[in-house]
Image (spheres, rainbow over the protein chains, first blue to last red):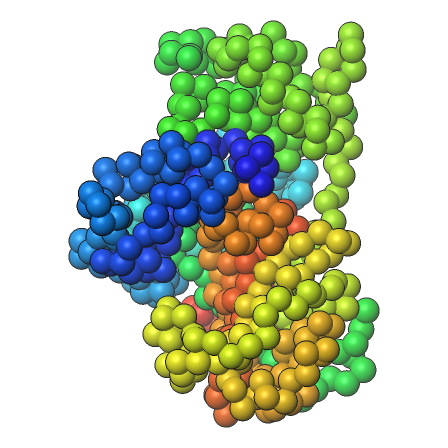
Length: 255
Length: 279
């Protein structure tokens, strides 16, 4: 396993161990005050060297996530003021009205450029140019999402930095009379690259929730393509799925 | 490492690589990996089209101020993954996009897709026993109680593991479940056979780093990102039929949803919801 460890991620072993432990601490799998496994048992569990384990623990100690007591072991620290849960933040971000009032954004990019290749290949109807908007969304001054939007030029040219303000892109488009009606989403998990890590104040290589979506209006015209990178400890996607009232019999077995 | 000014000069080149900031080797990240990831992204999004040439080794060395060894290591990995082909004397080229065998779950057709996925895949039963409900779930779903029957399975597609699922089922329903049936069918199907039909699911999607157990089971490196989902299954009386937590490999499993918005033109707050699952 050890060999695969490094080959798979390009992230050094100590960072992998650090990521996994820091996640367990943040999620409360190792509760405040509880002891972490001993160094030798971490060595066995992760198939890494003692030095690697020590380096990961040293970083956790420096970040004040754990406390090491000579002779008795390593313990999870009390969290300094429990931050708002991912579920609570999702409630704020999923409601277009509260996003506008209870959160802030930082604008990184707002400019019209030639369409990126991946968009052109997938949806040539975007046209030759797109407005690219890249922003970081904050809740309680903590970064939650890095959002990159691409708008067809015809849609984008009516938008300005001032008109967009703190609104979500869809809310701003609504005000301009472009009403989103449908959206295709794809959800995945990716490792934070250095840029994402910087903007989300997160470790390089840490898991990030990725949602890509294509939004159209009621006539099927494309309004926006967006790529969301969310910190998974601060946001989760909720979807309510309802089943048809009655079993569909044969149709359910379509293949 | 490249200085800022060096990067600027790079921009004047036909810059396919301008997004790769060679000076930001984040702590603990191998340098070769940054280049690998950058090229990998360019291959994925078609910046380097299939059949197209990659920049030459010396070009990559000078553009990103990396050693030749580092550049070679990144290219070697791409080659190993079958994404590029290196032709002696003529250069390095992007290979035809091999579509990875990837499963897809569409949330808008969730209840139709589950049995279909189950029929295309195999499930290895790892645990089927009563056990304590983890604190995080107890908090979320007090009605589950403090113990439940835990059904843990490893799901494979064409021999490759793609999901590790852990289901928590209330005792009174689990008593009627036969071991054999969970090796073949989706949990929703199995629950339908033993109790009130599942009529709704609250589905939560997140991301998590693979811990030692998940990494071993799913045959991935420690710490790689996994898609984490939780399906809370409820019947028509809004009672809990069970909870399924899944860890999925994002390179093998795709999650999609089609959403629609009602009353887009009215002044009401517009609600997005899943498109009705007609196909």
